[in-house]
Image (cartoon, rainbow over all chains, first blue to last red; front, side, top):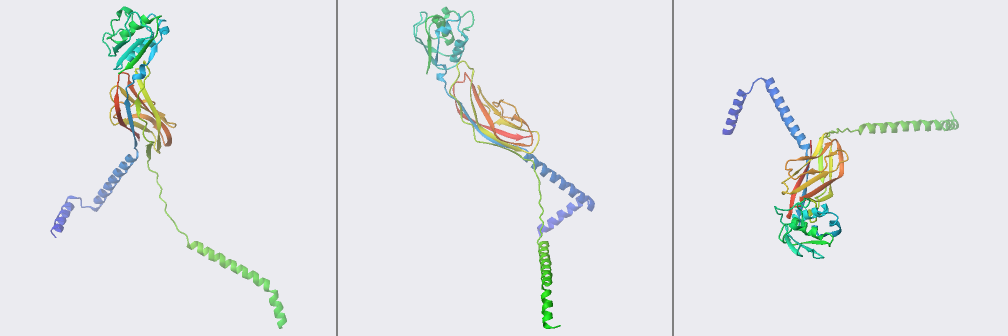
Length: 169
Length: 177
């Protein structure tokens, strides 16, 4: 009973607040209905205009130790005073592998001791093999940048033999 | 009228009786059939509507893209997969497919995607490496369905990336306006 009385009081208050004319009330109801219908329809339309599909892509990079396995052919090297572009590219790739490189030649070149174990870390003083400064006498010892080593080694190998490079951990 | 004459009269009018009986029977049967047909009619109201439809699906996940080889001298090493397909259906105009990643790719690596399309314009190979927000991969899709269109993934790593443990990313393909 108490609830009913409260409800009636609220309904009465509502009636006082809202316009009393029947035509105005009808108009309000129609407008409200149209607004609600528009919202519902537009939300439904928006939901239908997008569709998604998922794919899981798995990736990784393994150590690529065999990528530099190969040999520099002496005949190729002998064609140019400096290292040919092919050999230079190979040296560049080697220099980016964080592993040890063992270098050996079938015939020991006179200018270097071989076989040698080298670090592949890039040196700030790495010599550009295509420049004029790439001379055989620049090579000193074995613990140096691979690019420098190849420069000396390759030049000393001209007209002598082949150079075999092998990567090891 | 004698009995004999009556018999002859009845016999003579027998064909006429047969014809009349046949006509009456036909009329009754037809009327009955007509009455039955009129009484068994029903009506149905069929409501029809076509709503906006956009659907996209894919066939599984691409094979793991693991780089374990390289070309000497190449700064960027890559591996590709084109084994998965996508299907779309839409009855709307000016739709497109966008792609996004749930997380960025590791530094020095790239994940690229290319969706082929017969009826729309493929953007070509798109770099998704930093595509946390969607990027267009197919545009100009209008009221069509396409089945078994190829999805090409290419994973590339710079030569100075030594090793990356296996990771995963979720690629979301969305058909939208």
